[in-house]
Length: 558
Image (cartoon, rainbow, N blue to C red; front, side, top):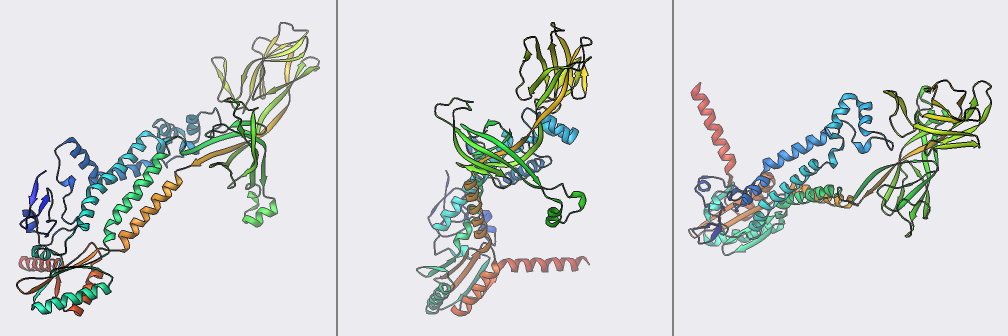
């Protein structure tokens, strides 16, 4: 590292613009400036100094404000694309149903393209998380690159500064003053600035009054909050930190709870209630046409079980009862950090179908067969000489493909069956294809048929299992972020330098990172009280000169 030695003898790191001790400009470019740049107190910024090694180039890339803003814009665009259609976690797809087909059915060709591009699960995708990671790295690098040098400069700033530093401040003033009067002015300024809640330091014939230094750290506190927040977001991909799973459970069933290893849920009953005609009209003041369209309540009465230590995976018998609960909308079952929420339902799903084995000619029934649509048997025996074999089962029959029956899903929405019927008259068996409102005899006319008798239905509850350990981290990040916003928005860093020179002058300079009106108000108060030099705002003076020059040039052109 090349060092820069100031005229005062202080050795500064390479890249420093203002001497850390006296404040003299160190580069020719800085010496030409009438008002010095105080953004980072003239300290050496790594990204603006080194660009040789691969580490330097990576550091400079992520420390760039342009790169950071670009990553933010790209992330926002991608996140916005994720709102065009519901993400896959919000699409109600029953067990066994095809997610892609659900998007096609709901949104057509656009839904198909959206799914094929992988946009249905944007926020959990590796490339979106990579963007979040790059944004976090950019914030960390930029904060370290600028924050550490700024903090060191402010912590180690000297009271006494070189006159060239004072003259290059935006607020500057000077006047000849006898030594005794100058000392009196310093004392009065000391007293007044303390009344104005400034922190005052004295060194020989110099004074530094400072207020609100912490405001300079506001953006970096802001960045810290963002980093913590983004860390919480990325933790959601880690196992056990964030769970958001769907559970469809039917009345009378016991199912393992996704995301809750070793826990099971039994559904006793699902209840669906709507408003009565008069009640709904009173509550919602809706038209008569909508009287029966609003749900009053839907809930699932459940029992939560935990597998005993001796239980094996999938064992639903060796369970220990934990608690009973009624899961309602906005009234979840909560246990051990998990929450089970009532989100959806399906009424009257087919549970079982009853058929009679009937002689087509006489209409006489040889017996009834009950098919459990969730767990059909292969053979249904009526007596020693009469039985029915189930050769094919198609829960959601969708038609034939090359003569073969097809099923869209394992959910029994439109069941169809291939039966082989054995009777005393037909010991070799007869084959029949039976669907709702459709019966076919592919191998010839049969003497017997499976006649539909009745159906059993049951309700299905759509639950969501959630657990989020990242919420405290996200909340902490949000709170720290807002603290940084408040620090940077409502306070400003104000400084006043006063020095008595050897040639009988009192010089003053002032600076603030923002809100110059408030600083000037304080300066007016202390100037009148302590008889300080009349000061000027050099930037306003420059702006006035430029305006006058432009006006003269305009008059000349006319």
